[in-house]
Length: 251
View 1 (spheres, rainbow, N blue to C red):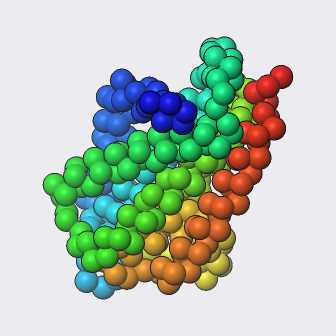
View 2: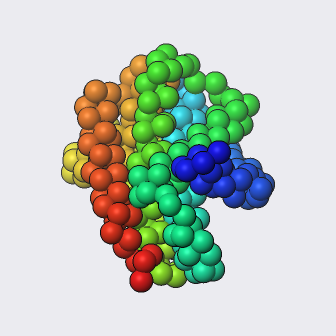
């Protein structure tokens, strides 16, 4: 194995060697959300008219786990390499910035999807949502994971210590994820907050992914795909540019 495939293999081994922490722990966290919110709100919240709240919650938690873990994989790998000083060995290789990008983002996407499958399997113990359009669900899962993996690379390049990385995740990624409609339909919000939700690109990832299960969504899945695809192209282009110029890694 040469080039980007070797780096991809190394990144997969990195999170797989500690799978209890990188895969099992996020699945357990999502399962706790499902148990608590599903038990408390099952009889009080109705969505889409015909589905139980627990069934509605499962795809949202799956996608939330996919996004958060895809971001965590690339960002934590890069910041750890910078702080521990072993990034220099990677810089000595003849890998191009494109190969760096593909390897890191592909590994992040794989981790996000694996965690998402684990959350879905655990959630099926409580409710099994119908999978009306599996191709839509797959497209949004992969595209969303690639987008967050790219964003994680940008965060890893920018951050110089773990405190900065934690601030990026706690003040940007977490709020945007939780306010994206994971636990509710935005139609239950006041008009002002519905308009605010439409400014959040994470909302379109969650809504488009949920459409793959129920065939119903708050906005058109094609519109969501356009927003998520546009956001991915912008973030990917920015990430490739930063890798090409060696932003904060070649000085």
